[in-house]
Length: 237
Image (cartoon, rainbow, N blue to C red; front, side, top):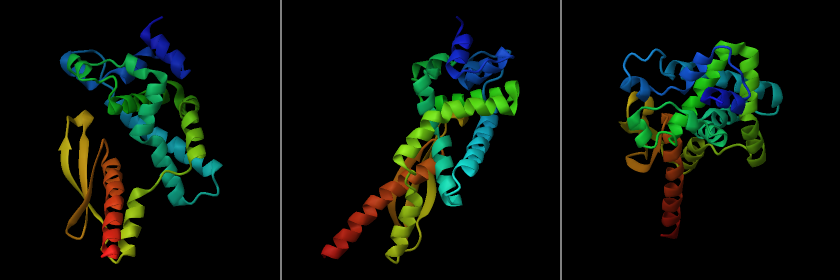
């Protein structure tokens, strides 16, 4: 059985155009190291898959959770389409094994890298939209996310660290937190953001993530802890 056949069996989706699936698995590093390769890398499919995934999740939330507010639906959608979740799905399916990587990316642990795993899920979804249309691709998304839906329902809504930190700061009469990107590292296909959060002139936290919003949330989480420690110290004195 070929690798493409194995992937189709894993995701329960048969492609009429097998080249689309190969493109979805094809990392930029491979194309960069093999000039003239006849198939493009998967970034355009990632773009399509990301947009379609957000649409499917938003439609499901609107239809199935009438009791949730807009803000709560936004939280749930963010939790379901973030890189952490998509990478966890890819890991559970063993998709890292089938990534087509350049030698450098392979040696640096690219098969386990969260961004590569999350993005290959997006690319496969994008390929499914083109190959099978909206209805079949929606069915595949539902299957991929089924375990994550259950996980979310069991654990409840994820914490909104940015909102919590803002409420905490303003509740103490402080100005609202301000977020600033202080560093961006990595190539275009593998960006990593470092963000700091300030209250007034003081830095309360720093966070990292593959997306700015993830780095901001990490900074806010750190900021909450520091703000609480500072508040306790002031009260004791």
